[in-house]
Length: 399
Image (cartoon, rainbow, N blue to C red):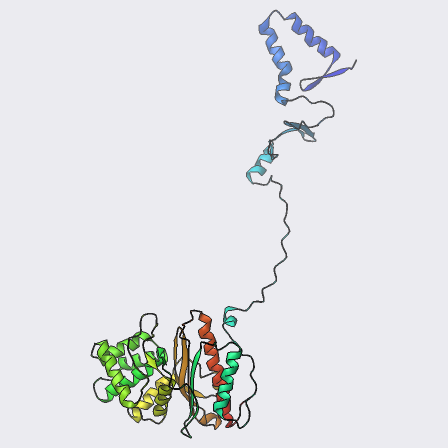
């Protein structure tokens, strides 16, 4: 028979058990006296909540666990979720601070390699594949026609893209290239040079007064291509009536021989103007008369030329021309389905080559809504301008 028994929360010897049993028997008849003894005997069992069987510290998987440590006994309760809540003061502090949870350090994923995709500005650059060198001594007309065919073959000119192009030698007074020069095109902002011409005609006839405000409006209309300034000037030409203003502009254009150019509407909000018309031929004529100082008068021709030299939008003036210090007096036109630039290339002073006029208008009457269409046409104009400039600079060849 074992010498010690586990009872409640204590180990008792055989003599202690006999003593407790005897005491309870002697007071059995007195319930009031025996009750405190019973409570004091079984109270440790209530505190512990469970009996421990076998090895010390073995857990009952369904309930609390009694554990022992060097600092004494600690009771911890395990919830059904498996989360451990400690009962000691230190553990409660840790719970408050959120430090009890077992955290597993996740390995940081290796940094992703930077994408080699092009930036937005790079995506907007469309490089035309190299075309065959131009033949020495060949006529510029044939070379330009072959270049246009090349641009179609590489997709920079679509089958629906119609192009008008003229090159006029200002020293020889000779048309070197004429591709669809008389085709009627949407004018877009190219109409603005003709409005400027009408304004200076009115000033010369003293029908309008030249003021700093008028000069500011003309500068914004041409150099910045401001649409509202254009509409204000048309109304002033008609004494406040836009229709009369347009009739006056058309009368002057007809008088000076601009047969393909007509203004039929103010420029709508957003710049979507499709009613006004012009041609490469009329733009070449405008710049030829300007160069010869035959627009209104030499004085006003010079004033118009100075404004055109300040234009901030360029297709004809490429990096190659800019690097050589060549000046360009031009005006661009851009609207959905149309991209153009017409102007004078002043290269004689810098390169010794002849000054010339380049007029390029590209129109797609299907009005593609793809914004890249216009970007590609800008690059086409710059590409053609570079090749023609090289030809005119050398006098006979381009590489």
